[in-house]
Image 1 (tube, rainbow, N blue to C red):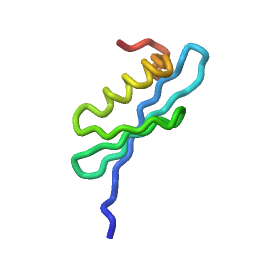
Image 2: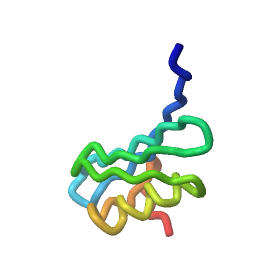
Image 3: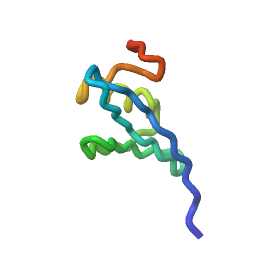
Image 4: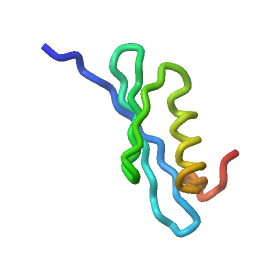
Length: 72
């Protein structure tokens, strides 16, 4: 029987109002990050949400959170 995985998302919007999402999927101690915009994937054991935010900032210039305020 497969082990259930937990999934969360990191969402940011760019300055054009487009939403960018990185899914963080947990399986054991590793997390698999995958970007819905460009298909980027990375495995991370530590700070996966920070790595997801970093990808969204650097690759998509998506820095606006839910409240519309820039982070960082």
